Image 1 (tube, one colour):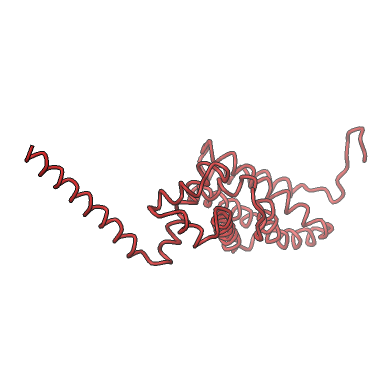
Image 2 (cartoon, rainbow, N blue to C red):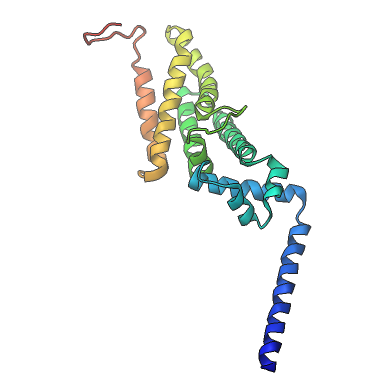
Length: 228
């Protein structure tokens, strides 16, 4: 009996030290560190479960903090989600725009395709979050608006190419949206299948884009019965 009491006392003492140690570790984390921890946890949960499937309780539990800490940093789940989305959108946009350095239009297409596929490969959780329908109003917009931002970068390139070929440069925005949208949707498909290899996917995308542009008709015509 004495041994049992001693064991229980030792166990309780050990639990108390462990609990105190955990509290001490939490106290030592700075506000900035805690914010980054919550962003990392939220990012992983939103990618895995979506916005609706993620709760403040689970975010707080994984971080080892109480719910008020999450509210203190982000005002709630919506605020945390908005920051995560904003970061991912800026990361993708920076990668695409930073990749467009070549002079030849075909190589620029290759660079844009690779940039998007690189992002999908390196920031898979972020891409999964971006392609979901946004459940909250955000100043940064949606994945569609991000694609539009990227298309704007491509638009200038296509405008010069159209002008050099005698085409109407005012149509460049339409073609830019079409090209970037095609790459983005292919990227969503590749995210799950991961076959063929990234370089091969990029090559096929550029093959379709470039050879389509190479044989572009200045005034495309419809051959079916419907004309309007």
